[in-house]
Length: 152
Image (cartoon, rainbow, N blue to C red; front, side, top):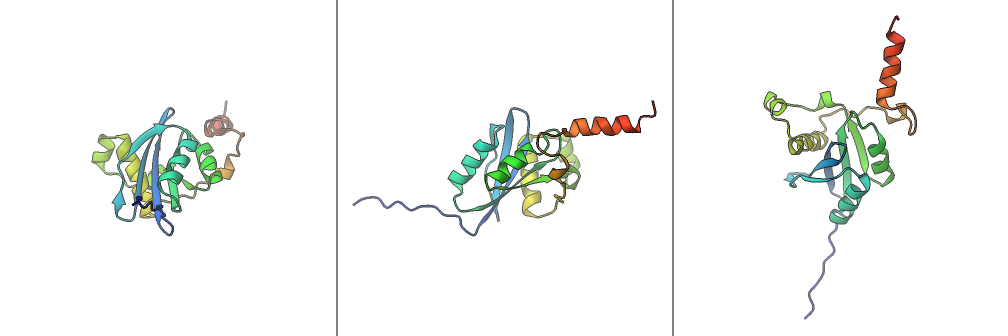
């Protein structure tokens, strides 16, 4: 008797993916409804994340999110192009306790991003079209604004 192989299909289910970004690595937390997966660390490459999500959660609707900041919108654009909805979250909209501020850890931060997406607590109204691909970075835009406001 041959073993029966059943293909896993997550059609109709939504998975939330919180990302805590750093230059060389990302900490990823994934949850669906009431199930939380253990956070893991990967290289800072959207293609690796896309491959992981499509391989392990076939057919699922995936919503990813990370805090707006130093890294801009390049990862959001690459994830969107690969078919994964990606939101850039305003860090001020992520609920944080004093204990979490004092004891910052990447897995905790990625879980907070994930939970904020799942509970729809955060506003993700940051506009990536404001900074077109190949255009000025967030830092260059800020420097220009500072120069304009500087009376000297």
